[in-house]
Image 1: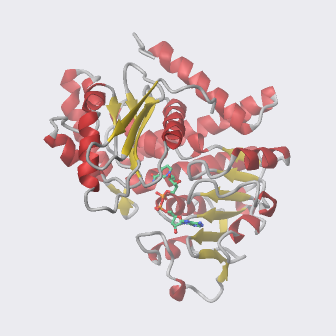
Image 2 (image 1 turned 180 degrees about the vertical axis):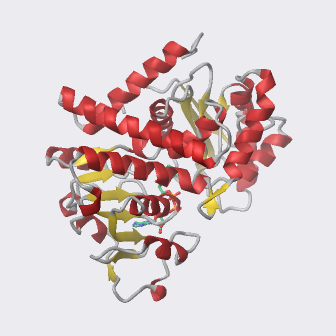
Image 3 (image 1 turned 90 degrees about the vertical axis):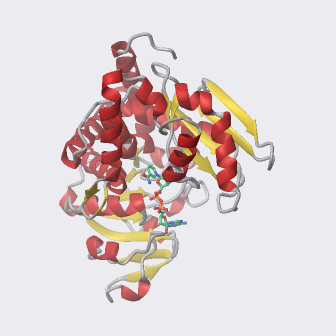
Length: 391
Ligand code: NAD
């Protein structure tokens, strides 16, 4: 993404603990932005700026008329008083929550906690500002659709746990086609087996692609003949760690970074940020990387791999399914029905990947550069369709 300046940043100091908190508004569309609140010790404003920028790109890629924003608090969320710190942060940012910023949970915060504090602060919901920007007669219905949509079940799990991985699988399917790799002959390896990694693995395997390796915090599980993903999903705990004692004999246990060098044509890093760096990039053996996690490759590593001809589909295209769900319900007014939402995700992400490859071919750009151009194209279309834009 182009490293442009954010539209606005706040820096807040908690009067009781001295903790620092930030809100970065990367961009406003029609006065509105969206993005969650992260709380972790050591958090710096730069991290929040980067995440706010990615949020803008995801909204644009999904054709959603909303800018990116992100909240952050440098505090340990496991401390007993963390809820009080969050409360004071939300109080200080109440004008933004009322007027401009729709928010949600992120690392270290929980949706129910945010909602409960906000109702005490007389901000009705975490998406108050977004609802206020819609037609008054539609607000109740949109809120009802959002709550229903966030709580519905699909494939035996809550729908919010499906959408990001589903979108990653769509991006992988289209990128394989563009790279002339036949899905039936392709092998995939996935890092992470939590919300994103687990659902990416499930929907990629349903496309007939053989998944030969998955890794979690404890290491890589490998089977050259392919892993049984639905079975592995029954053996993981709520931290996304697979029970090694329940694995079939054919599975080999390897070190944690082994997944990237097993010769899978498709790699999906879907665990943590900056896992492929200049320090380990020579271990990578693949043709295509689809980013499930946010920023799993450093810029340097991505540059080296692109030079070698490896195609990389960036996070803001591939993992935008969660943003898509939110946008489908609140901005595109889709009903809270899984099939309708998945059809929208499939159509939009498929189109984004194809257009990105097209722009890359036409202009001789890397996929990352082409994806940035796609975001610019979509932004232009969105702004032309909106009136009185406040950016
Ligand atoms: P999660 O906590 O549900 O799962 C994380 C997984 O990664 C677990 O399986 C864990 O064991 C594994 N892991 C941790 N460290 C590892 C390591 N060093 N090597 C291999 N595996 C390791 O997290 P999640 O919600 O799936 O999020 C994963 C990434 O995707 C994060 O970067 C997150 O910001 C991003 N993301 C999440 C969503 C979402 O909807 N949850 C949406 C977009 C992007």
